[in-house]
Amino acid sequence: MAAPAGLAQDLRAALCATPLERYGRLDAQRVPAMSQPEANVLILTPMKSASRYLDRYFAGLRKLTYPRPSLSLGILEGDSTDNTFGEVERALATASFRRVALLKKDFGFRMPDNTARFSAVYQPARRAVLARARNHLLFGALRDEQWVLWLDVDVVDYPADIVERLVSLDRDVVHPHCVVEAGGATFDLNAWCDGGRRRMSDLRGAGLVRLDAVGGTMLLVRADRHRDGLVFPPYFYGGRSRWIRDPHPLGHHIVGEIETEGLGIMAKDMGVECWGLPDLEIRHASD
Image (cartoon, rainbow, N blue to C red; front, side, top):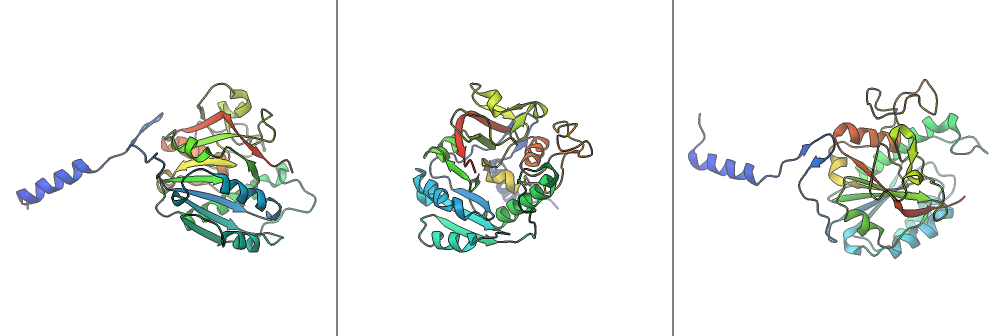
C-alpha cells in the first residue's frame, strides 16, 4: 500500500535532512566535525602500577587550556602492585571536569620480575592485555563526546593547547610525535608508515603525514570512528591486509598487527586515514 502523499513528503524531507557518510579508500567524505572549542573531548588513560607518574599526569591535565566544561576524563586501573586506584580516586575528588569515570578491571597479567616491559617474548601477551584494557575503558567511559584523546599516564609534557591543536585539524585519527628529549629520537615506535620502514623521526619537516599504524602515547580519535567499530584488537589483526609488516619484527610466525598498530591497520581497512604530526612533540618519561 502506498504511503499517503503527506507522509511520503515528510519522509523525503527527513531523508534529505539526514547527513550521510561515505567512506573512500583515501579520504572519508563525512559530515563536518564539531571542531569548535565547545566540542566535547573525552581523555582516556589506562593505568597499571602508575603511582610514580600521577603527580605529573594530573599537573599536565590542569595546565590544559581547552575549556574545562568540554573536557571529560576516564581512567581504568588494573593489575597494579601499588595503590594506583586509591591515589587516582583521591585526585579525582577535587578534579574539575565535565564528567569523570574511574573503572577497575584486573586481567591477571604480570610480567616476571626484573623483565623489561618491551621484552619481545612478552610483547604479544602484554599488548593483548593493554588492548583489552583500552577497549574496556572506551566502552565503559564514552558517552556523548565528539572526540577521544588517548593519553598514557607516563607522558610527562605536552603543549597546554594540545587538545585545541589536534581537534582543529578535523582528522579522524591524529598522533603527535612522542620523544623523551626535545628533538630526539622517536619514543613511540608503534607509529610508522611504509611497512614500518619509516617512523616519526624520519618524517620531521614533512608537516601532516599519513601513517599506516599509530601509537597510543597520545592519540586523538573522532569518537564516531570508535562507535563505527574502530577498536584496539587484542590479537594480530589484518592477515589479509596489504598494510601489515611482512615479515613481522616479532617473528616470522606472526601475521598482522596488535593493539594500537592493529587499530591503525583496522582504520585503513575501514577507509579511515591515520595522520601523524612529526614536528609536534610530546615528551615521555625516561624511566
